[in-house]
Length: 150
Image 1: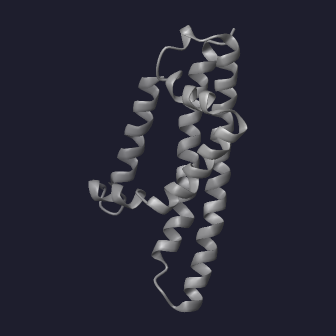
Image 2: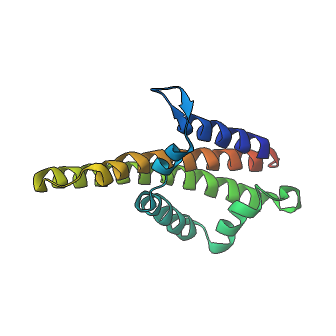
């Protein structure tokens, strides 16, 4: 699990740093993937949805069980954690799509006002990227928890 997540992020970072025009690695390109409004649009509703759909206790276990020791948990707890992780993964994709719609609406408004389109386009694209990125992270965590469900 941990090795898979590390390999996933290493490949993601290397792919993000690759300058396709010159076939060079530029670490500056990582800054293009950091967008706070997009991160807020994807993560905050997902966290509140998971807490509302399950509980604070289950939400806390969604991060402590996959990256800790799931062998000490009861089977019903593991099932709840797995369901919560799957729900959170699906919700991140949904919020990524919602963020893309928000970015498109902002882009259309900025076109009308004649302003810079880059921030709106960044929200439109990066929110969907974050949605799929966190979906992959939840899938990794859920697959580890499901190994311990009998």
